Length: 299
Image 1 (cartoon, one colour):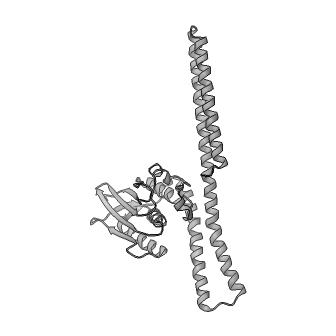
Image 2: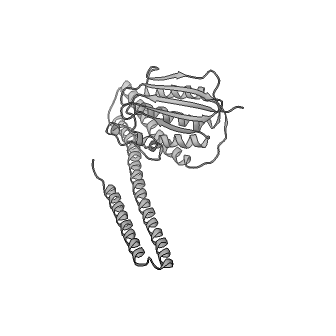
C-alpha cells in the first residue's frame, strides 16, 4: 500500500503524542517520588500533570482527525473535479466533431443522445453536491402524507430506465398490503431512495442482481430493504460509509465513479424525518443490504 505524506504526518503526530505522554508520566512519577511527604505539593502536582496529559491526548487526537478530514476533502475534490471534467470534455469533443466534420443524420442523432447523457451526468453531480450542502441544515420543509410503496415503485422504474436494466436485474419483490403512509417531504424521500438504489447498482460489480422490499414490521415503522449481490463491505466500514466524503478503500471499486456523498445524504434525510439508515453485509464479495427505516404515519 502506498504511504502518502498525510499518512506519514499521522504517524508522526501519534508518535510525538505518545512520547510526550510518556514524558509527562515520567515527570509525574518523579514529582511524586520527590514530594511524597508534601501533601499539598503532591496533590497540585498530580492535578497539573493529569491536565497536561489530557491536553496532549486531546491535541494529538484533534490533529490526527483534522489530517484525515483534509485527506477525505481532497479525495472529494478530486472525485468531483473528475465527475465535472469528464462529461464536459466529452460534450466538447462531440461539438467539435459536429463543427468540423460532415456527419450523417443517424450519427448526428447519436451524438445528440450521448451529449444529453453527459449533461444528465453533469447535472446529477451538481445536484448531489448541492443536496449534500442542504443536508447539513436541519431546516424543516413542508411535509405531506406520502404513499411510500408507490414512491419506491416510481424510483425503481426510474433507476431501471437510467441504468438500462430489466425487471429481473432490479426487482421490486414486495409491497405491504396496507398502505405504508409516511408524513414526509416527497422530494427528499425520493432523493434518499434513488441514492440507495443507485448505490446498489453501481456496486454490483458488473452483474446487477438487486432486490427491493418495502415492509411494515409494526404500527410505528416502515422499512425499505435494498439488497445487492455485489462487492460487499467489511464490518469496520459499515458505519463509515454514511460519513461525508467517505468511500470504501477497495481495488474492485477503483473504477466506480462517485463523490462519496450519496449515503451521507440518505442518512441526513432519514434523520431529518425521524428515521435511520444502516447497512448489513457478511463481508467483502458477499453483497450488501441497506435498510432505510422511517416512522409510519397513523393519520
